[in-house]
Length: 431
Image (cartoon, helix red, strand yellow):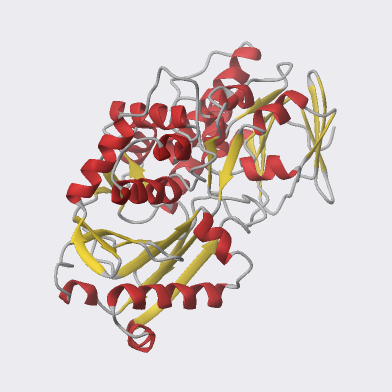
């Protein structure tokens, strides 16, 4: 049969690449279908001058073997994040350390032995200072890209425990760009057993036990099994039709949310901000700006980049703007924060980049989080169907690593292991 493989992998992001690598190394003929014109999914690196500019994933959270092992094997250098935090609230500058300690204590007190509740519900009754509440609200909206009135408080406990197990309070960067990790993962795919097709937008998956047909606009691909790595936003929107439908997955998806994210990277001639009082060795900048409240530098890397981050409601308010409008909004926010004029900032610019992940048709959001009552939703989404459909992607990670690249990679390994077990094939050492 034309376009026949043992396994189809739908999606060429971190999860799909991880799965395809394991499946082909075990000898299964694998066809990977990726809708974009590139691999990597929500890893999206551009080049400016002689340095990388990240528009998707940028940080490695902790020391996950899924990332560090791949990077070591491919000689991709990883650098620890350095520098201090600053914050600006109500027009006044302050160090962030003491307030962040109060916020950390607030998170540590989330009750794990009570019924699930939204973080907002917990926050309103916490008894913390208004300043700590506001910072915790911004943290959940920014770091988790979540609506505090929707996100499960119990899921935040699980996320924190997963970070502690993994030295997750430390941040690292891939010095030469996250796309080098994508390249390393793609090179692990055994090409003698693989077909990797870009610009292949799957519209429909027709299945029955032991038989899959994935249809694009102009082709049909067949296999006995499929690994589905579509982002949660795409699944929620029904962009890919399953026939017959999967009501158990729709039920799981009801308890998961996709956080909206827009990011802007502004490249300058030099690190001019380091000349301002208290800004030398800056890492993160937290503010109460209504559009781009969070900024960070490339520290300790020498690249003169300031990245503006709008997540949650901040991103929703910017939805629909084109790239130049978004960049201008970011420059205006940076001008408000630094006290410099937009014209002065523009005179220092050498390049500007942005990506609206909530508007990206192949992601429809930045990354996932569990809503109230959804502690088991990711596990339900990950469960195989009839030893035929297998599911991977960061939203299927049920160990507190959702929203991370290493969670996506781990989910790809898990799905590959499930396929191989079903096919009666012993896997090599996964990873």
